Image (cartoon, rainbow, N blue to C red; front, side):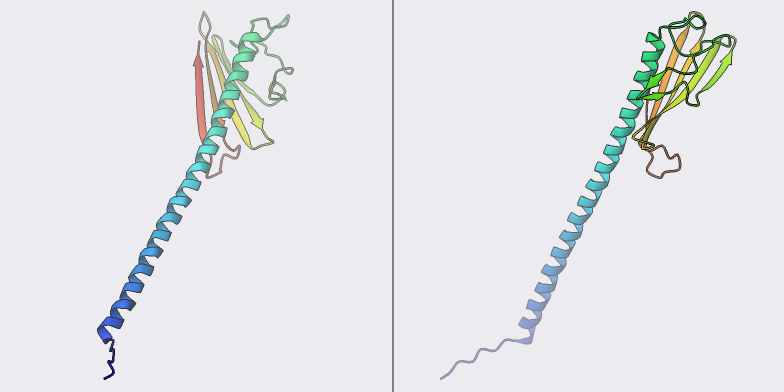
Amino acid sequence: MKEMHYQSKCSRGFVTLFAVLIASLLLAVGFVIFDITFKEISFSTVVLDSNFALYAADTGIECALYWDLKYPGTANYNSGSVFATSSGSTPPSSGVSCNGEDIAAAPWTIDESPLSATTTFTITFNPESYCSIVTVAKSGSPVQTTVVSAGYNTCASSASNRIERALQANY
């Protein structure tokens, strides 16, 4: 006698349900892996941009510190600093170079009063990619100096991914 094997409808439905369940599980795992990868790439981009902003800030403050402490002076301006200290100061109009850029010839602003002065200038890196806005404030007698350098990963102030990192020195 020949045996016949019958597969019930219930058994065939279980195999289909099991296959759909496994496919759904694998798809969910794939989406989770994709989401993690996407977030890691986004995070690494932010970290890279943050580093560029920090390096720009560091370069700006180093430039300001150098020219504030090492300027040889001239007959009209021999304070040992290139930056104005009061309304009677006459800073040079050229010859102050940072990153190959003459910051004195570029538009820099000087806000002066009888006992204090604030000089602000911008340094750009990699033609308009990164920049640093540096503010040197001098006041009092003896003169107290505050240097603030804000570095940016992009010079476009309207950029949605603009990151700012700032450094400050007081002496």
